[in-house]
Image 1 (cartoon, rainbow, N blue to C red):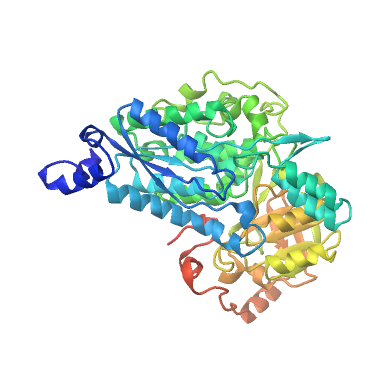
Image 2: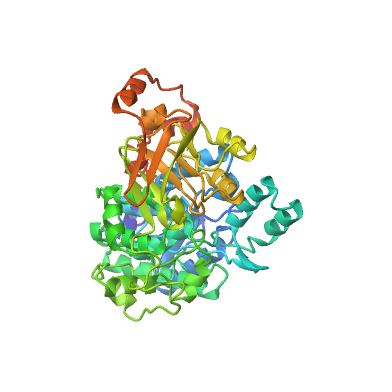
Length: 552
């Protein structure tokens, strides 16, 4: 066993003495030692209950003959971090989570790992760690929050952000905003739409690193506890058979993930995280692959923010496995790949079926013939930009308008709230990329303000930062190269005409090439916003969004 390095032989008597200092018996020490990376904390609603998940995992491990050893990781609540300096730390936390899991597993010789994430950057961070360490591993998340019906609509966190915009526009009262605030988030779990957290929890299933149901079983259901116990038992089987992440996370698994991403209409942030996970295994995902798959894989689900359904509805309609079965039956998914169940995808989905054809459409009757995400390229974004096509109003798929340029999210929000943005405008927010931010802030506040003011069908927003999975409208992010690296977005000026064609996958400023070259020759990088602390180190190490913002 891998853990023999810390427990076997007379030379390891001091090590065993330290185990015994914590109450471990000889019998427990002799068994496989399974690390449990638990991101439970008291600041993230999706993580507040993860102690119960961990206890269930431990029970499963013990039932199957292993010894569980729990440790904790950090985790940022993107909602609470939104709209202030805290959001600079969200994406940056992903690397720390991956690094800390690697440190703990390798420093203590764990034989296998169970990762317990739930929210935005914790899921990909733990998947990156699993891929990097390549020891038997399984993911079991905390599950989605429920959405609640209030009046004539279902509420979620995004409803509250948009309520702020509506209040600023004078279409909601302060009392109505408070009512929304009090009811939109009814309890624990990851925010209830197909936002980043739930996107990555669903894709963990598709990748084969989590058991069926991981993405959709609501946080408050007893089935979630049973799933955690099964994950604890299953890790022992993976250790016994030495089934490792590299056996599961093969290149075709990432194609599967992108295909289901298109069908579900996942968060644009999946275009950051999937390449980053693949990077740990030496697999490179070109952004053009997204468009190739989007052209073939139809959009079958319109979950919030793209529609009124939520993840609980996806669960009741058959879950991720039903979506996978529909794609596999139509030749759009490779079902021969190994998963953490010990069987193949085909084995896992053989009994899956769609139970509600409004929530999960068939391939023959999709919401759209193309997938939920699109990559745009042009003279503003030579290396690409990402948009959640399924959440864009039909009239904004093709748009031209004058640029309103801001060098930070804060400047843009102030202008939006002050009513300075008009119908037809294209808001440009730059110097918010991985290096320029630093940290590539998520911009739910400006997109929600625009939507709440009723401008989401008239105003586009383009940034080298990123968006929440909850963002809707023509929100185009991840512009690469970013402004701080001398990307052409840095030379766009107020009044320049921006041409967006999501159908054809283009994003351009209507300027002669000579003028672009002239402006670029005059451009100088501004001084970094942060040079000290973790963000200073992050800015020096991080790469472009087109590579997944990984460290090099």
